[in-house]
Amino acid sequence: MNSMLLEDFWSAARSAVPELPVHAPQPWAFGATPVHADDLLALVLDGTKTGTASALCDIEAEGEEVPRVGEVSIILDGRDSPRAVIETTAVVTVAFDEVTAEHAHAEGEGERTLAAWREIHERFWRDYSQSSEGFASDMLVVCERFRLVFPR
Image 1 (cartoon, rainbow, N blue to C red):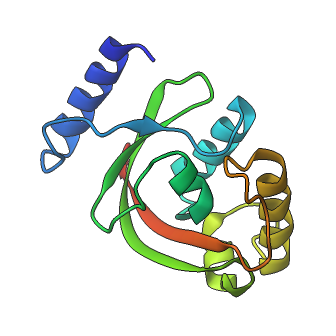
Image 2 (image 1 turned 90 degrees about the vertical axis):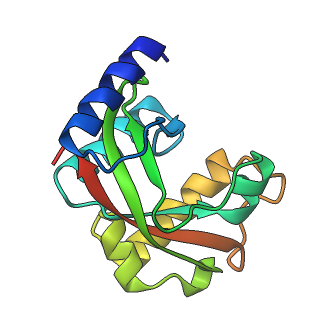
């Protein structure tokens, strides 16, 4: 990631939204591939995607923290360029088989149904899990809701 590009992006974001923190948060991309990153970012930018989910075991395997309400994130595209700022508005941790239809719809993927969400996410965690635990129907999933802060 080009640090100058990140600094310029954060400066533009703070000019548009002065209440953002002085220091830029760690940037990240949705998904596990550049195509995932671009496709999911497009859903965020058009307002379709207002939620995401992470396997708790992956968060722990990567040494990351569970998202917190009020936390802001810089979202990268598939070329590692900063494109959006989101703010976490809700976080709930539930078993995979307890994720709600409402959350599945908020994620904006596929048909936006719970069945489609389960199929997409089971395949994702089977293919890309960072944890040796892998996929299980009772695995804990961190369901995060967010709002697009920049660009508006």
